[in-house]
Length: 204
Figure: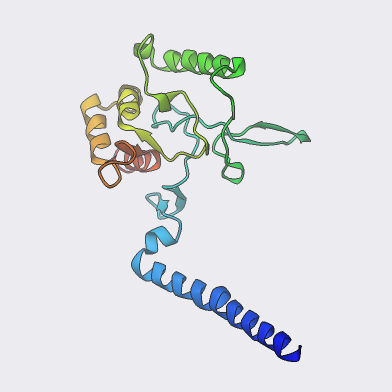
């Protein structure tokens, strides 16, 4: 029995050293050496060098002069009542979707309201077909990218708010185009934070 217990302890210690120290340390060193930007959270900085976000996590942009991300259904704790939750778009501590199905009346009301708000902001979109990511939320609520079609439809609004030509804004979108993954996965898209950082740096 002593030999069995001794062997179990030695195996546990060896497993702890290998899996708890050696492997994580080796992974960290390799990641920092090969992919330091990704390993450190894909953080992006402003013109003064301050970290303002990660290219992997969306943010809630609302002003007309910025590109807007995909709608987010994440929630947070109500400050006035800890037992209740309220809408908190892009709440990275509570990633998730609305879980509302296509027959949900609440979903259709939300889509209708968001569509009217969008058309007030950009009247030329009234009655037009829109990319899905312009009105619908995702499962995570933290999408950092928007489709190229979405970005191009926002270009006139951004251009007008900044006094730029639409061609200038469309060229910016093209510079930040991200192609499909491995040529077959996902669709062409642009990172919202990178687009807005470029706007800040080039046309305040």
